[in-house]
Length: 133
Image 1 (cartoon, rainbow, N blue to C red):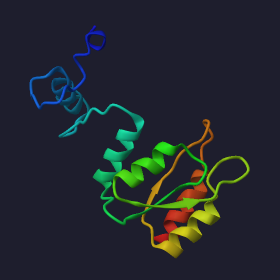
Image 2 (image 1 turned 60 degrees about the horizontal axis):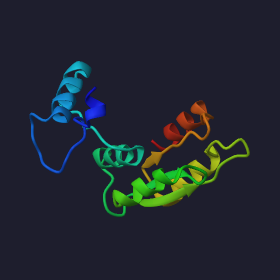
Image 3 (image 1 turned 90 degrees about the vertical axis):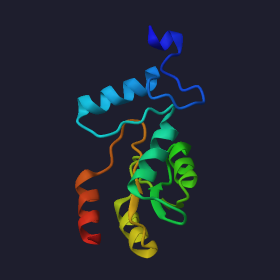
């Protein structure tokens, strides 16, 4: 019923007793976190995550060359510099290109998109991360 009345949507002002603020507080408590932020979209969620992780102006961020535009958009919105990583024929990230681009650019962040439900090679990604320290 709350969603149909639009009570969980922000309307331009900060009110700690507004339904969305109460929902954030209760969810944070339930999950055992100090804070929780409700967002309106996938792109906004990625932006918040990048900002919270420390991405700032000119921070290099690796991302799939074949991915949804929201990843690239969020990186740019956070001030990051997009470094595209090639994809393999199966549409997953190319771990060899990832390692090479990370080493060549000094990028320390990866925003990994799983395309069409296809997950990247987790052992390969872990090996890549371990080799880069």
